[in-house]
Length: 385
Image (cartoon, rainbow, N blue to C red; front, side, top):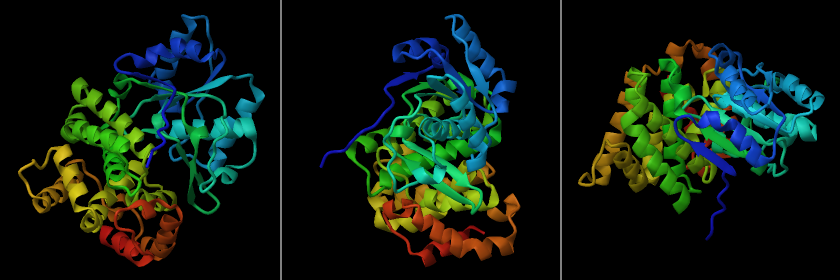
């Protein structure tokens, strides 16, 4: 059986990649970009740096910096209006997963109209909106190389998964220098997010030889370097490995799929405003333990790729080491439980059946090696507490 592989048309990877924006724009025939970002990227000077690169080639770019963490339907509307009012031929999406996801949605809605709900899965959005040049500043989401965006409908706290070639950036400029200023919490959350992407892509029912190669490579980069980047943000070698690992993990899950962790994570984020990477981190050990019986050899491969098991270890030993590592990683990176995060216990327990249904409706749990029932999902949520 063949596998369709979808990637950005242009990928610039390595130190200084973000400075190649003008060259990439020229190769794409674009000259009137809108930078979509957030206010932190403006404060850090990253937006000005992009504008200076453009100015050296007699190009200018307007800025829309009103994106928010975990983007919502209402948060992207002013961006859609900005695109419709302006004469832009492309979007430069600068920031973490939220600005890039926002830009993907704005690029489609700005060109084709309608409401975000019109584009949610199971619809496949293959129409091409405004071209997106993605410049990630975190090593985690992989959004720069995926055909997905996630936008929350705040009227019912549903995280809507939107899928299709139309959401794939036309170019990705992957520059680890932009991650050197990341605080420890974001380094941890985005790093475990990337690890989750790689692991879920590898154990997914939709895994294929191509996605496997990317997922394993990502785990080999992330495993030895996540702690290093967390404890010393100026460690360039660790930051470079994490950035490339994150991008490869994004390629892996975009061409396979995510699974139960992501299915269960989205409702937590929507209902309790837990950052996406952090809710993934909360869930990864419990979901892995639940899933190992259905894909023991695959999870053992993950343990070896991450570097906590070796070829001499049996499958059983490797998986025990994997679970120990995931718990130890959460401890060292100070990943809180839902309770320690500040979520109200009665509200969490009351919402568990609804969250379980939302998780199943997303489709992601159906890709898990062990497909759960609603009751089993509720059991995992309860175990988290």
